Structure formats: structure tokens, C-alpha cells
Amino acid sequence: MSKTPSRKDYSLARKTPDRLIPAPRLPYAPRDPKGYRPGIALIGCGGISATHLAAYRSAGYPVIALCDVVREKARMRMREYFPKAGVYTDFRRVLDRGDVSVVDVATHPAQREPIVEAAIRAGKHVLSQKPFVRDLGLGERLVKLADRHRVKLAVNQNGRFAPHFSWMRHAITAGLIGDVVSVHTAVHWDHSWTIGTPFERIRDLVLYDFGIHWFDIVSCFFSGRKARRVMTIRTRSLRQKARPPFLAEAIVEYPGGQASLVFDAALPFGARDLTYVGGTAGSLASEGPNLGKQSVTIYTPRGYARPKLSGTWFPGGFHGSMAELLCAIEENRDPSNSARSNLASLALCFAAIASADKGRAQVPGRVRRLPAGAAPGA
Picture (cartoon, rainbow, N blue to C red):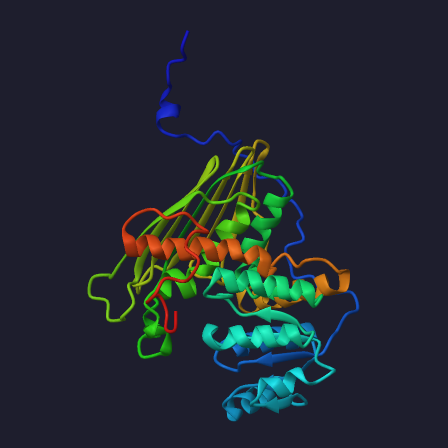
């Protein structure tokens, strides 16, 4: 005899016990290496480099070389953060230094790719700025090259180490919500600050330069499961003044699961950043007004918990990204933010952009290059 649905069923009433329970303790904060403190060089002293250097200074990491083709940019960062660091305009001179063991390459993609390769060939461990590469084939070759030279190659996907994403990531890894069934992200904010900046020349500013963080998070949460296909739309918002389309959505199919990514980048009021992860034994949700201020809730059969998180994405996520690379070097293992693992995120991102271009679903991995027109030099 079939059960007759009740009013509770129709109203989608929560079945999780309405009971606040202690939050699980998870190692979500950046973990520094026990004793490894190599000489670090930063190549590319543009705007985002200030966040890198603030994070490294706070962590006590020794940055001994700063490089930029515009000498004054490197000198300015030297004066602000590491007064004893050497200043260079030619990255080859940095790679010649025997006391530099780790190189943080923070230039734009077109300039970054040959620098990463040169650094690997020079025997340096590398942290590459995101997005890692514009060609999956090149990324695969760089991963193999790093293996041959026995160096670690990581990608600065610092969103993984933002407090809320890191806590959720560790909760999934610990099996606290069972197997992941769904991941849904929605970012509603105002990106009009890019008007008049070089970012405005990136057609897929939202899906590529910014969205790669969220494609990476989705890939990370679905770790080990290959996306089957992705369908994407993009368009301009009413009365937006910036050149790139500021509205985009992507839907991703996984074996036994799904994901959605929503980007509203032209909203001057009521900014909101939401993430929901549904699992077979529980769920996770995060919410906040921006990238830096987020609360997390975990729902389980025992009740719900809200961990008290400390730290922020900027600069904490940058600390975490470098810290993971340094720990991996010290412990002789692959970093969790390895370039090898990041290729799945890039494959998803490239396929999503190609889907928006062609108006039909694409299979991640089959789109080997960043689609033409997505970004300058693509």
C-alpha cells in the first residue's frame, strides 16, 4: 500500500533534526611546513602580487627576489614587503640564483607559460598563477616536464584555501556528508570596477578569469569523478557599461551527480555569494555578502552545526596555496593544488566557454584549448 503524502512532504519541510550540535574539528586553516623555509622568488609584480607578498610576509616565508619587466613595480613591492629582496627585470637572472628554490609566477598567461617551463628546467619548484595554461596539451607537457626534473608544480587556485571552501573540502574528504550528489554555486556581485582596466579586454572575464575559481571548486568537490558534459549561456546585463558579458550560467553533468554555476556580475546592491553541496549522508551550505565573509553550515542526521571560521580568502587563501606547495616539497608528495589535478578544472572551464560559443553542450577534455576570443592572446 502506497504512502499518502502529508502536508510536510508537500512543503519540503526539513527532515534534519532541528538541533544544533558541536561542529566537527577539521584542519581547514593553512598548514605551514615543519622546518622547510626555502628562498622564494616572485616573478610578476602587478596588482595581485601585493596579496601574495602580504600572505608570505605574514607566514614568515623568505622572499629573496622580486622580478618585473617594469623595474619600479618590483622596487615598489620590495620597499613595501621585503626590503632585503633583490630586484630584477629579467626572470632568467632570478632562475640563475642558486638560493632560489621556489618560484611564484604571477604574470599574465601569455608571459607565464614560458617562464614556468624555464623555471622547471632550472630545477625550481613552481607555483603558477591561475588560470594555469591556455592549452591542455601544454599543461600536460609541463606536468611531465616537472616529473622528469623532480620538481613540484602547483597552481595558485587560492579559492580552495579560502576558509569556507577549505572547511567544506575537508568535510567532504572526511566523509561527513557521504558521496557528493550536487554542487551549486551562485555569485551575485558588482564587477564594474574592471571598467577601464586591462581586465575589460577579457571577453570571458566572468567564465574564465574569475570563474576558474568556481570551476576548480566544483572539480575539487567532485574529486575523482569526471564531468560528462557542460551546458553554458552568457549574455550582457541590461544597461551594463563594461565590455565583457556579465551574466553567465553553467550546468554540469557528473556520473550520479550535477553542478550549477551562476554568475551575476552587474549587481551594485545586495551582493551575495552562495554554495550548496548535497551528499548522500548530509549537506553543506555557505553564505555571505562577499568572498571574504562567509558562514558555513553542515546538516547531518544528528543535527546541524555552524563552525566558527577564522581567516579570509584574501590573503589567507594565498598563504594556503603556497603553504600546501611547501609542505608537499618537505613531505615529498604531490600538492593537493597540483597542476596535474588542475587540468580537470581547466577542461571544465574550456568546455563551458565553448558551449556558450556554440550553443550546445560540450564534453570536458575534448575542448583542448581556451576558445578563441575568450581572452587576449587565446
